Length: 105
Image (cartoon, rainbow, N blue to C red; front, top):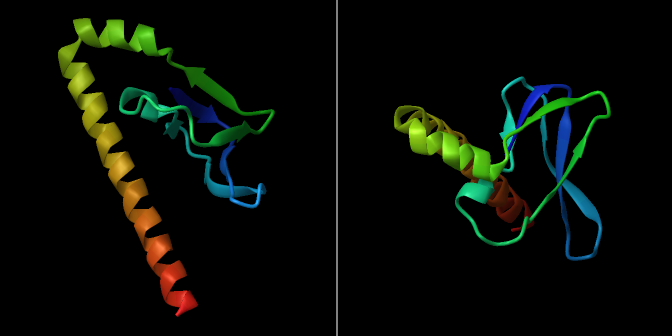
């Protein structure tokens, strides 16, 4: 998992035609990505491009798991906050899908 300290990252996904499409940009300190490693065993589904000047903090999975074993309250707080962010992202994606469908009818 990565935490954005400063700068900007772009999250992209390969479309059916092979072109890369931008899903979102993260630019606020504290934005994070790579969190799906905690909940999904499938390979990564997106590509992240970081601005060369961006500064990121990496949290290796095994180090986080070890830390969480000893710090249950912190673990719960982080997971709860991550869940809130994931819910917000899912809502935004659902709105985009609904807008796309309604624009095609």
